[in-house]
Image (cartoon, rainbow, N blue to C red):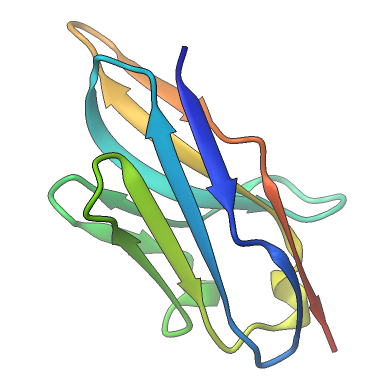
Length: 119
């Protein structure tokens, strides 16, 4: 059973910083990529940033220059450093891990962590 454990959300004032962490465990498959998505009330879930095992990264335009995604030294971990936070960054942030099996890819999601930025 694959588990993604997230931590690091919370309440912060505009201009502040938070660091999200996610650790995946419980699979024999090969990790392909990990990333962070977010969903604000009444909106669709959107990509924030992701990183492959080759350390290629993608960022949403709205977070470029403010957020940094990185892989941890421990296997199957990912971090999201969020600086210069804005009220519009308020959302539930979800970690996603993609693994490669013999003939398929498998996506797993964390339970989500709330990030609230006050103005």
